[in-house]
Amino acid sequence: MEYYEKENSVVLKNVKNFNIEEILECGQCFRFEKIENLKYKIVAYGKVLYITQTEDSVEFTPCNKEDFENIWYDYFDLDTDYNNIIEEISKNDPIMKSATEYADGIRLLNQEPYECLLSFIISQNNNIPRIKKIIKAMAETYGKSLGDEYAFPRLEEIENVTVEDLMELRMGFRAKYIFDCISKLKNGEVDLSKADTLNTDDLRKELISIKGVGQKVADCVLLFSLKRRETFPTDVWIKRVMEHLYFNDEEKDIKEIHAYAQEKWGEYCGYAQQYLFYYARSLKIGTDKEKKK
Image 1: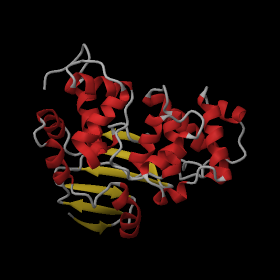
Image 2: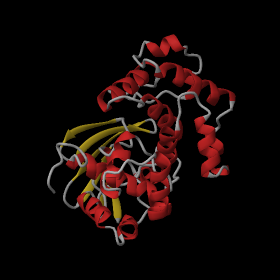
Image 3: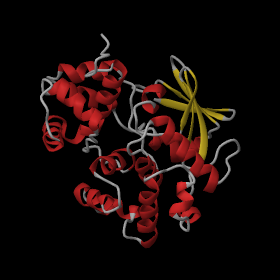
Image 4: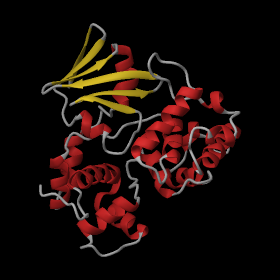
């Protein structure tokens, strides 16, 4: 991969395993908007970024070399060899081989942990349009203006909000979970800045200490913002997909699915989960509307 500055942009050339639609539309983030085919706007790390992809390049605007190297290079996980990962998880696995061939441009994002945590609490029992609407309302109400968008509010900007304030953003039952999360972050019971000092199990336990955070939400935060690639977030949808693809439609509990995934994909579980999620959702695998490849 190579990159260079051009006016108000940074252009990537010869980047492999990068498809902006597959990256943003695979359930790992919420603050994005599709402008047209392979052109998206995202809001992350207090910045608005437009990504335009063509057959042989990816352009980030507005962006300079400093921001690209300090923010977006890591955000889009550009230091990782996805071709090698695809080879590893597809060995002797025709199902995974099909999934990775279907969407070989997926990359795991490295999001800001605090924003990722609050966003996935909001995502519980919710649909994507409503999740995005609530997060946008939270940013517009408490965050810093970025022109036509607003940054996700920093902890100090929402540390005094009440459950009632959060209910006004139409969070519903999630308001009390967000309130508890803010309280625990504020008093240090949950300290994301020390995440690197904890192993994955202990970090998961700390996240689950927040009211309303179960293993699925904790695993999403671990995978999408804390680089714990061995996690395998499993909701009802992924459970059904795994049962259909790997267990002949036999019902399994979450622990059995996690054990199977860990044995099969090990340190690459998180990558496998994203390929399966996008593949199964796109083709409606395991549903009555399953499409032919």
